[in-house]
Image 1 (cartoon, rainbow, N blue to C red):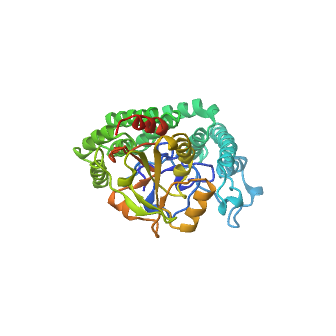
Image 2 (image 1 turned 90 degrees about the horizontal axis):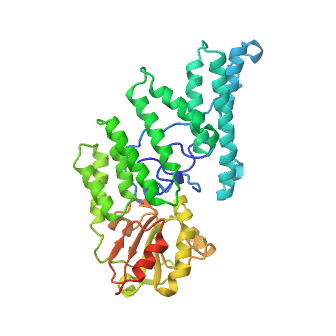
Image 3 (image 1 turned 135 degrees about the horizontal axis):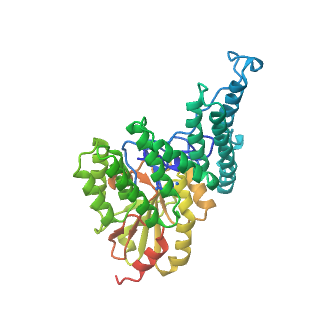
Length: 407
């Protein structure tokens, strides 16, 4: 599992996207490739406890045979049923069950649901305002918060001010326990992070680390901030990643987080050393990094089912098209389970570089290099040395810099 679930693992509810966000859907856990996928948002992942997720409103069963006749309901109870119905997420198009939607379709769906969620929040607020003594008034307040979060997460900026107002009011409530307070603060940290420009990798990571440090100060006995720091480490450059992983490993943290930090440190041992990689590609080509010395090589650990991998593809293809003639090569290490799907996808997307495939979705290079999530993108310099273990985002600039170096 991701420390904080990734967008590529599918939508958390029909409202649109996962409310418990990762680093802008940065990666997919390769161990869970058999679960539903969807086009997506944060690098390396590891098995560790998730930061308290913000759950969307559950589905509500309406109109069951054992429910009272609507004609016998009071005006207050009728109003409550309206709230429940409004909080029920809409059904996605049936076609999406068999054919993943295009990014434009997902965005349109999210925009529509952002407005619906905002309307649901308004209905919940109206209910507890009109019926403050109703048995469901407290739940209506919770529903409002849930729907405001969904609306904001899906891009309804008109609801941000009200969301902040509701959250701050709840944080001042003396009856709020630590878990509830922590969940609220995590939601604020996550929202601040996703509001950063996803293309500005450093800004997103910086905001996430800043939030983790704030949570550490406010909740010094909780381990979850270390899980966030680990998430940041797994998506940072080698020096930053090493420093954070060492910090985590010297603190008292749950075993899962400690093990993940140690795995990261072990993986970082390859940085700055010659990388050995030799295999027969799915199309029959022989690949050997030793024979590619003199060129800059991107080793791309990926899969067709991973939303963030597919989302990164335009950047990868653009860099290849512009820099291939200057000495830039790409080697794909696929975690796909279906060979035909991989071959068809690479043909459709005009990906001419070689791909490694091993039946079953796992492969020896994933095990050898301890790759726990994808996309993982490594850059090897002209001397065959692994120079960058997190080449996403500004791939073009990083490749150009390595191409400019003497062999």
